[in-house]
Image 1 (cartoon, rainbow, N blue to C red):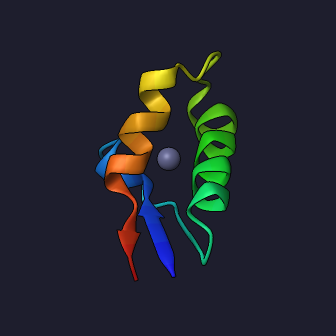
Image 2: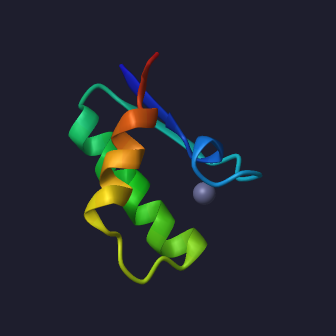
Length: 57
Ligand SMILES: [Zn+2]
């Protein structure tokens, strides 16, 4: 199981998600960043930064 905590990227945010598939965790994280943090564009380096913070649960 993979897990991502938004607070590791956006200090103060307690949103988190987990899924067995890392790609799904990244997809959900990108969706959250769009909806909760008004990221108009998620750049390629944003995806890399998410991936670096995905942990095994
Ligand atoms: Zn967040």
